[in-house]
Length: 341
Image (cartoon, rainbow, N blue to C red; front, side, top):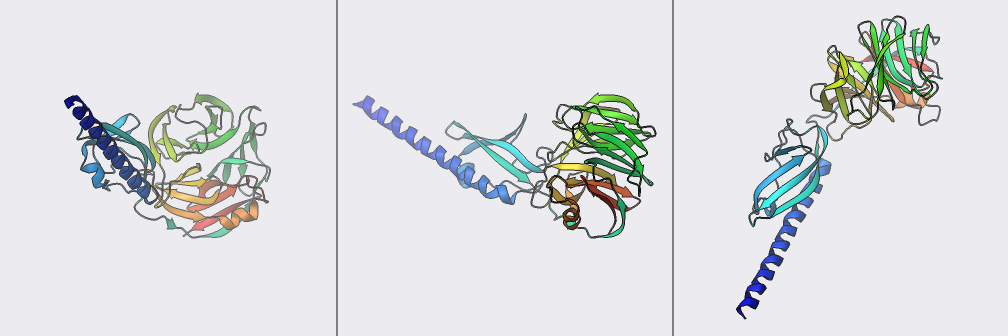
């Protein structure tokens, strides 16, 4: 009889413990879901529900190969944008509960809508599937993509006829490019390699493997110290200019209410990185130190005028001529010079 009573107590305790664990996980899930859209800012406290905190001995957040018990959104641990984490809760009853969640971190300040005025238009070869776009003085360096049609070209702004052309092998899809001194660095889309050219002759000097973390080559610029690359994610990858296979640091890009994925063609100018977002008619102004999108230029009208009804003929070129911005796109017939307000 005593054995049955003890067994009955054990069952009751087990059921009570299971019910309590379920309440903990459900309340945590509800909290995470409610915060996912609204997001956090750096420095915010994670105010977890009482059902969690009152029943927890310890609460740990696991992120990749890191862990923290600090429930503050710390930039040493989190990045801007989405952070896939696991909450590990050790209950006062001695059990360990795990729950996956996404912690979205956004910029504290809204992106400024940057106005501009078109001050000039120049011809552009509408056959060119622009992936990289650079200007030095009145000289344009352009990397054009597509299998079997990829090339690096050099021409004078105002002329659609290239002075120099360096054709790529048929299996190479050219992507973003950047000038460093007398050299041009160029990424490839899925070949996992980059090329280095002589800026004056466009002759290939060498090539290098892309870092493993970069799945695809997209945009490229130079900030005076590092090459900065994109791969279609939310990240800016700062590469060692002397060894572009080495990632120096990684910065994620987000605005006040959204994470920006498909960060693409890049240009560094006066301390900021400007980037188009693939399949969006906008160019972002990004703080390279934090990844915060501090400004946005809307080129919806120009895109509609130049895409010829083809969804792939997107805005995809940003450069600077002095303090004026030059913009173009894939298979666009024009380059626009705009005065940024």
